[in-house]
Length: 331
Ligand SMILES: Nc1nc2c(ncn2[C@@H]2O[C@H](COP(=O)(O)OP(=O)(O)OP(=O)(O)O)[C@@H](O)[C@H]2O)c(=O)[nH]1
Image (cartoon, rainbow, N blue to C red; front, side, top):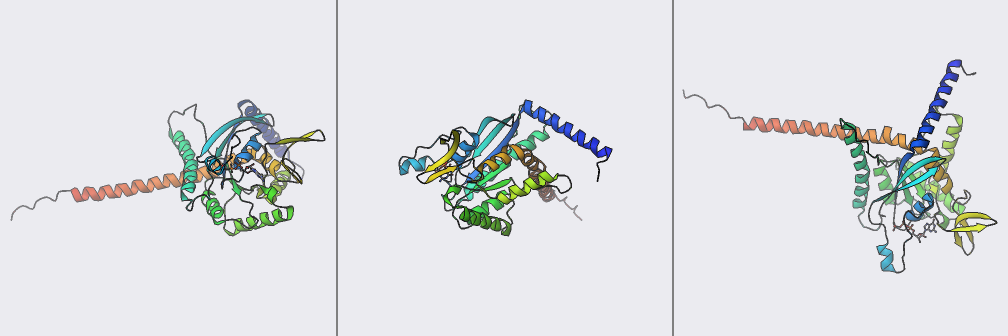
């Protein structure tokens, strides 16, 4: 169908709006927050340093077993890094979390992470209710949660299922296969398939590149389908660089060859980085605000409403019990 003059006008207006937003973003910069979760030693800190191309979490010195135990991440640590992506300033907050699986009962880890995410929602809720807004208020909501899956080659562990099921309602979970260089391509493909079957079977709510058939163009739909087909993203992290044939690359070196971090034939790191910090950054932020936060807000306010009603009923009962029954006049 040829475009009508109205749709041409509409398209022009949308393009202008996009340009204005882009110009504003270039000037002001964007803020984005990513949480990193997974068992100890899965390469989370190395991944962050690879993602940010800087030593955000300094290399650990694990010279002895005692030192290795001490060097583990033990607390939820938000760190903000200033970067530039596609010419736009990006203030990227990385929230590193202590690994789980170290404890017999990991309930404490779950609750700490959930409490951190909900605290950021509570801060926004409090800010929204203020008569006078705080101009210095910083929105620290987590926009994406990268969940590191151990490259076991089997399927998801109970811990993975439980965590993602519980946190999926509060954050955009993006599952990744950690240290994917420990599997060959056939093993990796089979592992990814089993992980996605588990995710579907246990109805785990992950970020699965949603699109709108009516609103989104063919290119967006195709891109989202391609990215969804890569889930869970396979990642390899390394801060080491080598120069080969004049080409500088980040890789892990083994006696039998090199695993290149940015080579999409070796792993999905570059595609994950691009979607996270560029192509899908805005979508992740919108889903966080329009859906995940909105859901939390509704739940919280309705619970407070119910609690208030219960309190009122209790107070009424109490008042009635306290009422002095007037003495009957003597007959
Ligand atoms: N084979 C392989 N090893 C990796 C990869 N990424 C990191 N490592 C190694 O795995 C070890 C642990 O890496 P870290 O980045 O400290 O792991 P972590 O998940 O942050 O550990 P915690 O702080 O204990 O939670 C180090 O020896 C890294 O060099 C990877 O992609 N492949």
